[in-house]
Length: 152
Image 1 (cartoon, rainbow, N blue to C red):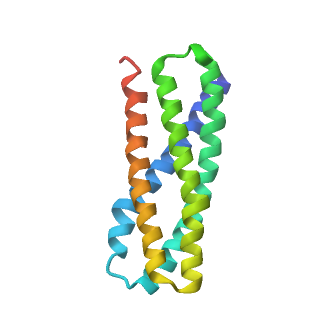
Image 2: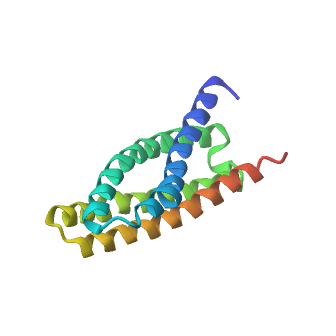
């Protein structure tokens, strides 16, 4: 593997670690810790957390897309093995879900917090939770495909 591919792989894995790790933290650590807070405290906190996290994920998505494209070319482009095409397809699906979260659902949370409309905010946070679980499962499957396709 040449230096460009090694750097691309590093950036790719770093982006994946930030994205998947952040979802694990938010879903399994932060969400349960916030359950006992009132909506007036919980929802502004979620808005702040999502605002920061979605910025990190946005940068990660760009790194994953660019490095993934370079790696796909390096490993044969359209002639790459089915595992690489599967990872690419799952990754694109995850990115589309993230785009929906960032540009459709998150603004609903922001508007609800600004209007102090706690029921609407809670529904939007519930949507985030469900879509994060889907993306987390897709991410774990993608990692599984990557590791199991190595042929150790």
